[in-house]
Image 1 (cartoon, rainbow, N blue to C red):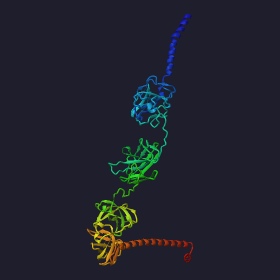
Image 2: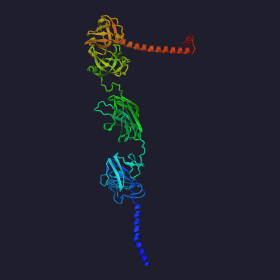
Image 3: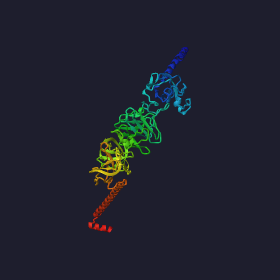
Image 4: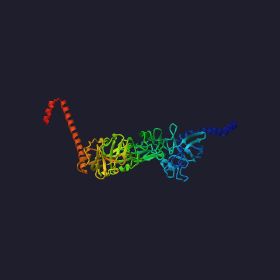
Length: 579
């Protein structure tokens, strides 16, 4: 009996106990089966700046508190070798070339470490990096992590250069985080940008559609250089994001051709400059633009003013210069009067000349100017274009070459085509023999003298023996024709005018331009009278002005005293006491 009991006990311990223990051990192992769902893709760099292969990487994060064996896991179908573990709550980076094994000077350690050629010798290199032969495309590609039945992946359509994809706390993938291999993902802090850059000039309507380009100019009013990467310029129909361009302090940046994707409107535009935080930095508004002109801001000595002006002088990449769009003289070649008269009819010319007779003295809308080369008649389509000019004013004039009755004239049909240059210029008539007055003297102020050989009302002829010349007193001058007769002598100052082929006459301007005498008249006789009359007329004008002021003051004083209650008799008595 005892023997049987011994055999039973021996059987149980020898045969049943190992099976029981083996079964229990297997059950325990199944309880500790690895859960790969704690692993996740955390950050991906498919398109680094520089080497697109050696600088690429994929970051994995272990959310579990314990170490996980990666044997059996794959990244982009590339398996991890044996004995690769990722620590609990830690990061691991998978890259193709950690320490420049192909000796091309590019490696993960060189780009993302300290460049020493070793990994882990710097406090910033305190995370795991594993080499696998990964390779990613910049467009339409994905990164995948698989561990048995578990899979995590991310697909991108286009990877921005130098920017990684990161997963945020809500498990959303983003490409606007900081690049942080081996570290916790982090939002980029909102950067403070220097707002010293403005839109300074816009050329939207080129003179030629083929040989000229639209352009847009920016200026940095500050001292610091500004990186305009990711800055935005918007217009009425779209926007352009700037890419890696610097504008140095006190310098210009011009965007044109391939660097300008905006299509600038000729009929008006609102351009707005934003920093990368989408904060408005500057706004530039212009209306309809004339071909060949630009819209600009004027320089105030330190930076540009806010007012937008249209200028005839675009200054791409240079200090802006305002030229009035109505300034017809800008870019015009200045000719002498004689050169202008020799131009073809209907041609537009620009001259400078001194006024020798006021507008209207020698005919409606007519005046004359001259320079050292000669004189010419001016004809204004509207008299108010030039109502204030007097003899001695130097004018700059743009007009069209015409001819009437053989006489050259400049036709002016724009009130911006006349500009006063200076005043009180001396104009002395040239002394000519009567026979020399002709084509060479047309349009200029002359003096001639001789015997009166023929008279007819307001017309008479004078001859000094070299040939007679016609003297015509025009009714528009207001001159009373002086008494004269054949055999007397005349000294004449006037403008030489042509009236018909080879027919010239001298047109006196004032009564003082004519001296009739029984004796020969000298050059000085007429000039002395003319000068005296002009002097007296100015003196009389001053006296009249002073008299008017005195009368005005007396009237004002009388009104004041009367308002204070003084009678007329008392006022006269007060005036006597003052005397």
